[in-house]
Length: 243
Image (cartoon, rainbow, N blue to C red; front, side):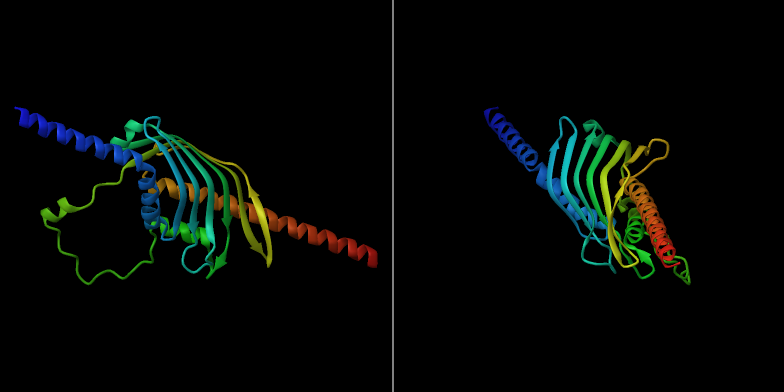
């Protein structure tokens, strides 16, 4: 009896020590996961400086997240996100659907580049969605997988619901007609991601990048229009002086 009690106490002690170790190293584990799993989605470098996760309250804070440019573009970062604040429901982490009440992203810097007939944001979108050029069909259909192989297939990705997502204080650096300029972007606010239609983290990330791409192109288009108007105005003044 005493022996079994000692064994039980020893097992409990190991579990407590192990659990404490995991809790104490949670921020380092999250940082490592972001930098390891992120590139699988973006196919670029992903670097994160600091993490602070409070599991009991469900609050997660990320500092200085940098996403590199896709292949074919400069070595500059495409996105630099100053701070990301996330409020989620802790119990949902153990279910099939993760519920996030709020994501607030502040101080975003983006570098817009054009190369090979496309731009770096569009290239990132393609990387995330996994779009690939069509290939010729195989000469013969692939053999059916044995039932044992089907069991080994990966589990479906967890669904995610994001009640509200905001991106504030964002700007994009772009080169228009050889002239470099930094353009401010309006506050981006998305609500109800994954509520009406099931959404994975990959699909949610795609939605955010799509909106950011649209706002960037709008800002560039507006800046180009203003530049043309300014140039036309200067030309008109010059002609009036001459004639």
